Length: 156
Image (tube, rainbow, N blue to C red):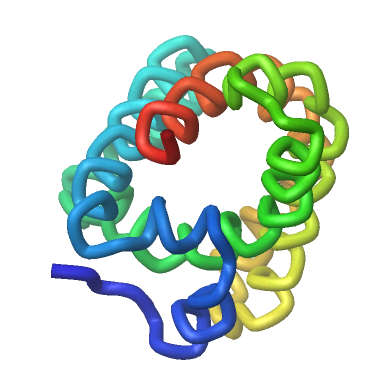
């Protein structure tokens, strides 16, 4: 069952990447892989971040999965131009393309995250986003091979 916000899902319904990643057949596995990727990346971070993540998971065990479900349409929509470029070039390795265009992918993801953050009304969450935003590009770059693998696995 596809559980996304209707506004975000409708905005990307026509894109070819969205058609693949957000389809009812693909979306649950995509969410599972993204959720696992986030957990793996958090485990590589410092003690403070790992502890905060564990505390958050105890308070709201489904927070990572729920967040991935809610934000995926925004991120997929932001990646449509990169995917269109890949297809226009006749690409045959989406993972390699995403890694080669890491800056473009990171910019798209950050723009989507920033747009979403503008709509956050919870001051605590908004403040937390502001504190990590400065490191976000580096974090995305470090995780790009894994991000690209997850997208490619479900898109082609």
